[in-house]
Image (tube, rainbow, N blue to C red; front, top):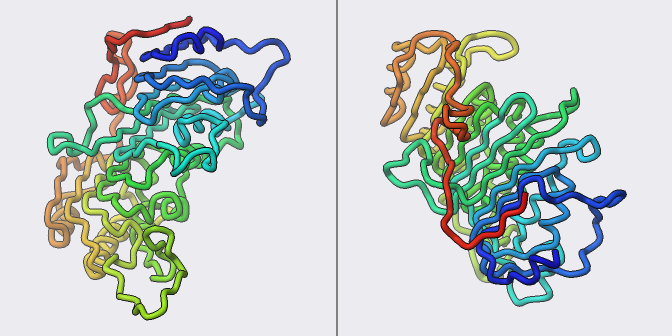
Length: 364
């Protein structure tokens, strides 16, 4: 910490398993004695255990523009709790910042594109970008993320991946999220979909891979009462004398502004407890059209038990249906997620390995 205090103009900080805690030390809820302001930091990279990561991030203050890479492994004590490290993202000014100390709210990242990938069985990869998708990046992001989290934990039968994923997503500033991609995050319920993402006002593109596509379709079908919708600016329930309430232009559905939906690696096979999965999708699309919340683009990738006549029925409802024409069950081919021949990590088939040519401090 003393070394960091002598480098206020630091632009890159890279710690790789170099944050040992002193014997008997641990993370504490009490505020640190001092907060180190790294006002020029452009890139922060930390790879360590959760307690060691927390011990550092709670002691530093960084700009909201700083790119963040955190690779954190849980211990037996921390389990699957990553809330301590998320504070550097939800409040980059540090753990000791209080709103009353300054005028206005603290600077925060504005994440507009979010990818979440479950790496079975005990790890989660999260990428977030502050800038929206380019037309050339309609479905897969190829640029360097502003936030990259590689989280792993000790396996336990009580571990619920969906709980970990949604807790992380809620800690990330996603109020202005436009594009969401969740890959093979199992166990997400309809209620989790609606409570975490259902009311986001700018979300127009969703890509779901895996079995959670079924519960997402159920969330899309659910009708929402007008009273349940959150008013802009926190004005819900506030009455102004002399003003008449206008009918909301927002459709009474979850994900009201969703226009593009991609379903990947999902099964449309009928089996208990889910019956008629294709009919559920077709009815969902029809119902949203009737409620003036049309899905305008539907992309179907590597889905099983989906046939040409099914897709033809969907084309009668959706303006643009893009299907890969795969008429088969699940593929045994290896996934594109993993490691390439050069040892770089690949997320969704794209390698995010990069180098920054900035003054940096690296400690290993």
